[in-house]
Amino acid sequence: MAAFLKLFLLYFVSICFIISRCFGGDPYVNFQFVYSYKTLSPLGVPQQVIVVNDQFPGPLVEVVTNYNVVVDVKNKLDENLLVNWNGIQMRDDPWQDGVHGTNCAIPPKANFTYQFQVKDQIGSFFYHPSINFQRASGGFGPFIIGNRSIIPLPFPKPDADIVLMIGDWYTRDHKALRADLSAGKDLGMPDGVLINGKGPYQYNTTLVPDGIEYESIQVEPGKTYRFRVHHIGISTSLNFRIQDHNLNLVETEGYYTSQTNYSNFDIHVGQSYSFLVTMDQNASSDYYIVASARFQNESQWQQVTGVAILHYSNSQGKAAGPLPDPPNDFYDKTWSMNQARSVRQNGSASGARPNPQGSFHYGNINVTQTYIFQTLPPTTIRGKRGATLNGISFVNPATPILLADWKNVKGDYKLDFPSKPLTGHPRLDSSIIDGTFKGFAEIVFQNNDTVMQTFHLDGFSFYVVGMDYGVWTEDRRGSYNKWDAIYRCTVQVFPGAWTAVLVYLDNPGTWNIRTENLDRWYLGQETYIKLVNHEDKGTQFAAPDNVRFCGALANLQKENRASSINRNMKLLVILLSVVFIALVDLH
Image (cartoon, rainbow, N blue to C red; front, side):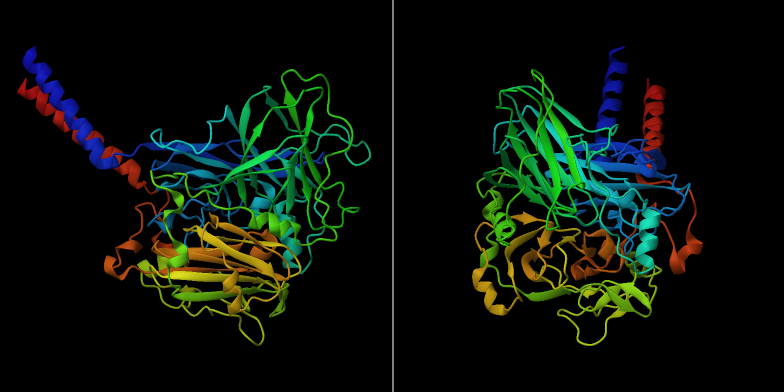
């Protein structure tokens, strides 16, 4: 018996050794997402909504930094689907990014397994469909990456997390909206603002019809909650506020901020923020949670307001009276910009690693390349409406860039995207940036459009070093913040203004640069930056085992290809079985 126990111990140790070799020591977490349609009435009008696992918004993905995340996505829509993991950097693995320029879409009735590591990241993010204007109908959800237990938070641990997904919303579905855009029309004023997929509380019987389901957040008096607020809307900037409560900003898109109290805060399309909110009121009644349109004609946009309820457990009655006032900056257009400038990095806090976030002295590094990205109002290009970046309206190549590089497909894209605005007529093109791996780049977003925009860079975060009205010139570098600029991945650019960021291009691959305004994105306002690590001898372009094929390589696609993780598990089971049988035979 003792001999058999020794053999069993050897078997157990073999299991542990094999698992550690297969999984690299970091835990794996598995999720299954089913994308489908459902008829809902968030604003009181029945419409087709995209749900994930029958939920709107989709389920929360909550993991710890360095976890390996496996998400099997089943497409039950009637059109192609891709899922982008907004803000997740996909270190050294652009194949999992889920955008059209790097991935083949998931056809209807098919599935694809995303597998990536949330390497050295913490914070608040979200996922969403990235093609076919589908985000306008849903399909999005929150993604939280927590600290390891050995790394403390730079503030007392909150009593709980509360996720709020806010955004402007139309009662027309994404297919109708994109048809309007393709026909050269503007989308017009949204029909409302949703909070967690629900319409407004009836704070005003004239503006809000009866019978609309609204979000109610249940809280306990005296406790402090971390509100993670994500703007997953279409194009309208929103002001977020909670009646009679302070918002203590502590984190944005994976980085801790210097802690500052605000009575209200502007959040732009695609941005995520964390606020600590203490329940310090007397609870004589419930309180309003408000997300209202910014930079719009207030008299026309009153009905486009999201209202939820903050309900204390000892509340004495319903919320009543007018909503808390929005910012009064009609005569001061710099108020919102100054608020954005006030968001600074907490240099003394640890992030995903046990070292200060501010230890990287970005202000002392020489810039190796500068890109000026200019946006203009949409215009007609070859008979169709298009939005441009530096005079180019991007056309996604038939064969995604990574796939084309891997299989040596020539001619589907060009490495000639201009580093400054082109003169002459705008054009349609599949033009991308030939970036310098490990270069330190300065990117200036010059917004000559008439609307507020936000810009996002997949695969990276960047330092937001400056923003101002007017046209950027080289002498504006003297105004840059070179000490404690916030580090993030999505930044606002005010109309008639510029925003400058600095980014270390150390993540090899091909990465999407885009506006988060869905209408401008759909009309072509994006490009990609390609970064090649020549010391890696090209292995960075090795595709995962479950890669999908399309375009010039469509004939290589075989449905239901096993993912690498499933194959690894099969090999593991076979190997363990062989070891166990050998041990039994020895006994």
